[in-house]
Length: 326
Image (cartoon, rainbow, N blue to C red; front, side, top):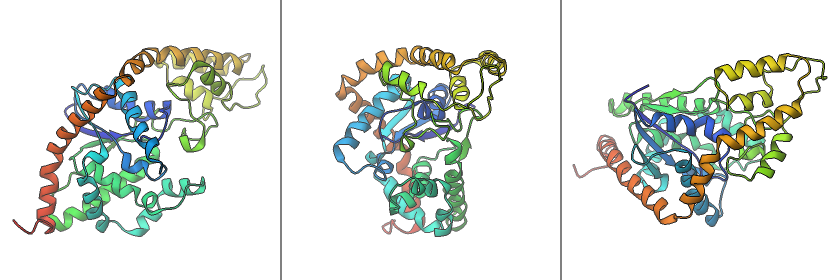
């Protein structure tokens, strides 16, 4: 994929884990060389699960440092914080008039989060509308998402159809980008990897903590002399994230050959994981020690993002009648 305007973001809701990285961040970093890459930190969205200000401000800078450490280049992309462009909240309200309550009620992500104990507030319920505003305010053509977010993008596309049917072709209908392997990254318990489920493998944790979590990855009760399953096996699927195609085939053969010990695979995964992110850990130490530099990068990105969003929101204001002076 080349020469597309691509947008995505990651919530500053805590430590970054490999679900974040392989599900979205790596795609974004890989795409930055041949596309117009827009990458933001959605701190408005984070308010659905965080209401302690000091945590959110810290996590915002930490998330920015994580992205930069993992390879995002601010010279090849536009990188900013959501709340630095308040027009996204304005567009959120405008778009809320073009989505039905029933479509929001059908959101599987909302229902799943409520079932896991999150408070059913309006912010969580209307999350897909704010996500639509994030995308449409900048004219994004492609949005890398996990499989669990595909429904939200479908809501965005529906909103575009309804809005454009009234006001003309103002908004671009975005397409999802979901890779087969990384659309949904399994956690240590076999569910989707999520901070909410406490089943994550954090990229920048210390090695002892990482080792304990990997050794707790859920496995079946197969005997030593039995082949091990690969489909739906979190240990196999997590390990494959770090491997090329040949290595994946070799690992699958090992799983299907009697005699494999899960403990041996877990120990291998610990070393593979630690080596894979070794450069990023060194970068993080340097980058996070200079908060002023992180803030400058984000503010520079906000100015660039504003240049993209201003013509779009102005056209929307004019067409909807909100700009009554012209």
